Length: 341
Ligand SMILES: [Mn+2]
Image (cartoon, rainbow, N blue to C red; front, side):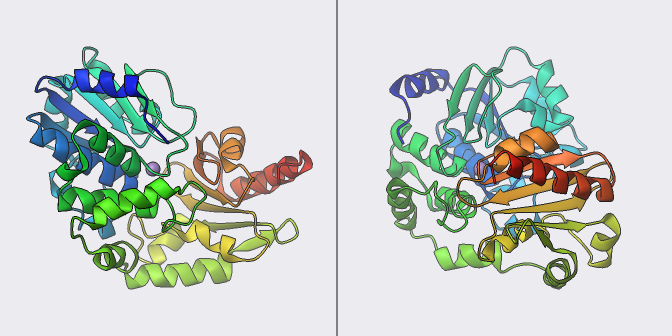
């Protein structure tokens, strides 16, 4: 994929003079959200801009190794008003790895107060909202980190990618592609991986940090949910799993612990679609994954007030767990009856 020359020219002109810049990413930030934010922040700082990264809430503990992550302002824990000050004085607000300011919870209200800043989107989710002055929206891109790498290449040259930037970009490119296994992966993604690897980063170290740094509670919770909570139906083609707040407490749940669980049913032959329902204080988080042509982006939009990508999407439910699971099973039936499953 190629980033349009006009878009790059516009971006270049927005960045022509040193500015106060805020970089935002989505609630429950993942490796791609954080990696793209940190890498973009580093290169912009080097160009003389004053950059603040803000996330609506905290990142999972196993991403704490990412270089520069301690400088991110976590809006939910921001006692000294750093987010407020940065947003109010911002000339440019970048939104990375999410497609609508509505995904920011209360941070969105703060953004609304600054109406003079230019708003720029860099993202790969489907159906972005239109409230941006410049949109670098590429749903075919396998990750936002890959997009940022391409933009850095075009604007400043790949030799400007430092080892720290390479670690951050690699984390997002690796996690958003299921270890470079999804259909969104192109030959050019591997070209960019080669560029990152050439900076001298240790890919085994990154892999260990991201995938082999969990707690014992997480391992036991995983065993529990697969053994006791996975339901398979629709002739073995659809699965769901759920975790109530009570069950999460029993396994000393920390944010991020259930990350990736939803993918596991898809390791079963003939499985086409998987869902994971996790109870939070005022809603149930819905994660959806699918294989091939089964479109969980449309499914999430239609049945769970959400969206995302064709094979990975999410949403929310505001009824009880029991009702949510029943709604899911009925929705699967309806979707299948339309030939979409
Ligand atoms: Mn992403």
